[in-house]
Amino acid sequence: MPRNYWLHVGAALLVALAAMTLIRLHSAGGAMPATDSVAAGRKLAEAWCRSCHAIDTNGARAESTAPDFVAVANLPSTTELSLKVFLQSSHHNMPNLVLTPAQSGDVVNYILSLKRR
Image (cartoon, rainbow, N blue to C red; front, side, top):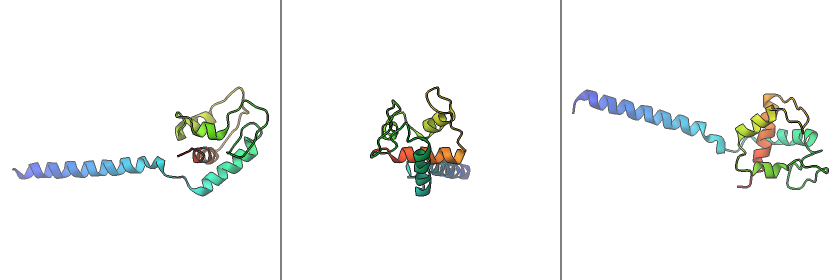
């Protein structure tokens, strides 16, 4: 086989290996977020959300139709992206919370930490 053939095969293998590495790093979404982010998200939920939502498996909530966070976490449609979009959107039955990106990420990480594995 000509030398160029093996150069092309080697280059293709390197590109494939690099792509798989990048995909693996990108899909590390299944990894647990930093504990301090989850703890910060819980504190924010306690301060801002608890009056309407049950924010954990132990907490009672006020008389409300607001879904509890454990139920939200376990919906098949709940993802990091869906929660971030939800938190950035206005809703007529929720206060208009203005969260920084870090706060939003912390609340999302907290909610996702409630997902039953």
